[in-house]
Length: 156
Image (cartoon, rainbow, N blue to C red; front, side, top):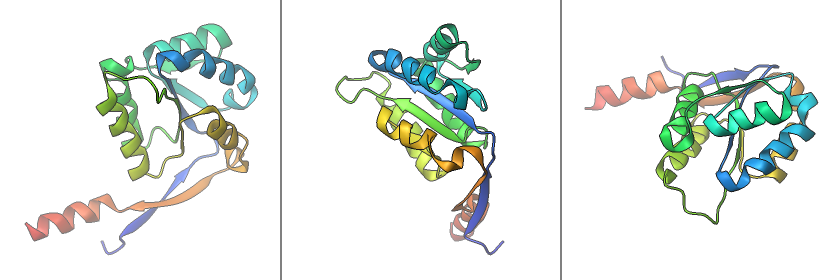
């Protein structure tokens, strides 16, 4: 195991996580409705209330996990680690204190570690959803975590 990085592929059909803080849920629902044609070609998941509201108001099927403060952000992060979430749309509220802020930061960190596209606002989400990569595979390099663990174990 000599490679420091490995190549991962985000498939043509993406697994997209949809998350929004309470004050941004309606904005995310409007965004989903406006981008329904594109989103309907992908697998959608999200945190509890947000997932339910998107499904109810747009008809898009969204697999729901727990609410963010009850572990939903962590569940989405685990799916990133498992390679089961490729893309995150997270309309966050930067002006309101969040009781689960450490969970949000952990999700953002794990998305960075695994080089997963993440939009934190509508403008970024608009750029991402209109990207030519939405309709094709995307290869990206990430740290070879197995080698990293092995190297660390050998130095301890």
